[in-house]
Length: 186
Image (cartoon, rainbow, N blue to C red; front, side):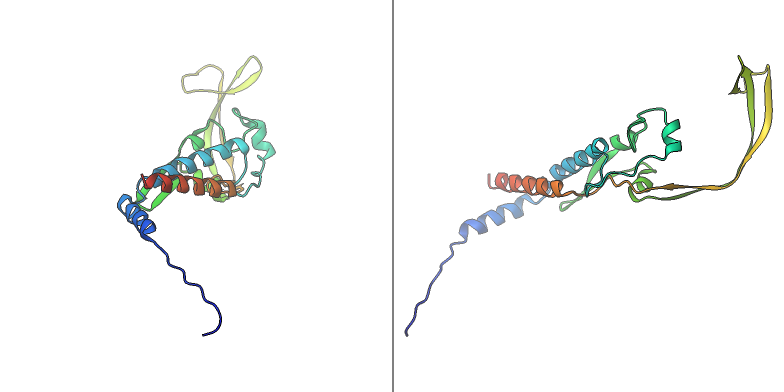
């Protein structure tokens, strides 16, 4: 037979041994590493004020920004509860979930509209040095009571995603996975 040919013989014993070792270990030791990293990454977004895709978060409404008492220059941070309540949970040997159990986390992540119903209530006022202040039940002198009614309204919250995987996260996850694989062959 004229021509040429090439014969390749693969010795896959080493690869098979490594795969067998990985099967023994399972991914249980990998999931907490990924969970820790993704939790830290989500918490860093509160400093950079950006979504996982790099887009800046929508600015605060001017009205809210004027009356915000703490961390006035930070979006999604009044006292830091949302950021501090981002955690991970390993749900099985191949899955890790990162998120927050704060009830308002979803509206900030996804955005949406909050319906406020009409309300009517009695309010108590008192005058102190020419200023009108709210009065407690214990205040008895110079107190004025009146019914205050406000109509129904809507609050629109823009999406400010803090959970997700960025391009940098993908690279870091690959690094964590490579490091884990290197350590798996012991």
